[in-house]
Image (cartoon, rainbow, N blue to C red):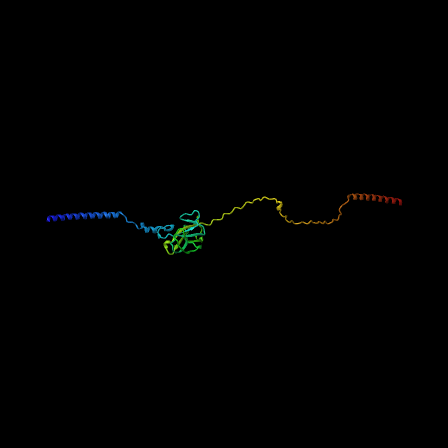
Length: 269
């Protein structure tokens, strides 16, 4: 009886040892499987993905900013030669805001010189509001706010070869992570090109027709002048033929008178 009982105890002990060994092996296998299968990260969860997605076509938030702030602003109208990193404009220019949170926003805009044209110098605003209030739409197709600006660029000195380099910054009082900065360049106003002087053209003369005769211009009337000559002491010589006859007659009379005187003297003697 004791022998049978002893054998049964040995069998049970052997079975317990076998079960314990199997349990240890299974536990080790389960730990190895858990280590080789990574758990899903929070960013891959549906809720995190929806928070990262930009709403209504708005761009993603800038790196290092709150991922829910998609607001941005543009400066324009852009001139030729503008790039995605720097826009070229002339004064006055327009600032447009898009995609800000759908709530009342208190904004402040400022301008400073950059890149060799007054680095860090504050540029005064001569046209346009320095602060304004608007309500965002968080939609790229809807304009949140728009303002036109002109700056006093004399504080920056002479422009560079490609214009004045500046930086525009908009601060949102309600959310510091919504602050944005945009570099841009102001190109000097184009100088007007002098127009060439027109060459003189010869207009062909057109003879007037019977139906369109030009009215004669009144001419001044010149009256004739009467010239009065002062008489000279010597009478003008007139009648040359008659003078010769009278001279001849005088000679004859003188000769006859002389002969008569001679004859008279002879008679007296």
